Image (tube, rainbow, N blue to C red; front, side, top):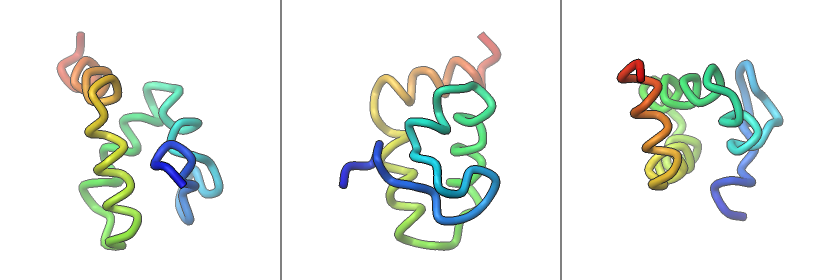
Length: 67
């Protein structure tokens, strides 16, 4: 299973893939927030790998910087 197909096991978007959640600005910001507070190593590793993909990271930077 690649990181895009990983389904969140808990929370607001439980059962949805990372790609599905990240389709919307609110979801992408949620994934970034979740990375910062998640204590489950398996989930944190998937989130980190997903958010570090160049296209995802660029979009997240755009949202965080307000541009």
